[in-house]
Image (cartoon, rainbow, N blue to C red; front, side, top):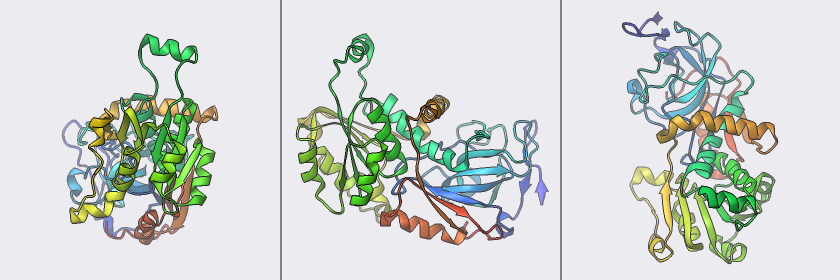
Length: 367
């Protein structure tokens, strides 16, 4: 069932027809964050033709042209057939793509929304580390480049103040602290000298995130978030890195300093509300005027050109011991996809949730 579909002058890779009826070559999948709205990997990145999915994850990436309406997931895939000089059989690539076993794409990226060739995974990087890396990319860009996520003062005077130690210590609040993005964000802010407060579901997870840069953590299912913020940050919050939205966004907004900054990266609390249209929203938005808050959002797909530099920086920090990664690994089959999605809502995961397929003969379900 191979055919060439590259078109005149294109570098094509073969096509595997009727992929849904074929035995699965999948080896695993990952879901980031404590919810499905907490940020993600390089959306639109593309996938070589005839690649088999090794890992795939729940996400909100854009649907691909030939699979509109399918669930778009983050994945690492292995090339099984190639007619492109840039890719050989066995290469691994990372991207957002529909949840199917086999797909066919051009190797030059001309059929991708951003026109970029699909990025390959370095041989020295494991699949799990690569999937953790993509959450790190979001955290890195927000903490280092987003005007509402940065704590560093810009310009010559800002540099001099940092050099002389005159910059006051900032207090940062991060929701979904035990999720893939939150784990990295806490460490990055801590490396910048901040006092970092995290919010997660249970006391056990709140205690554990302190191993990943957090000075304090709130277990919102076991204690009142607003009351605890008043105790932990009586002078207020400088930067609020929000992955959740809804009630947690409201609670954090009440404790912002005048001139504080809020960056919205995800809205995990609204996932079930998308279907009904009953979005909780931001009820404390009136504080934006009274406290002169700076508020912004971040979506990785709008910053793809910055990914290479972010990846290099994250790898260097990891090698120097300045950044640790963690995930929850589950071994199962395609049939366990929905069970793992349900686990995200139960709050019993830590870091990214990775389902590794242990049944090479399983077939795709619901693809």
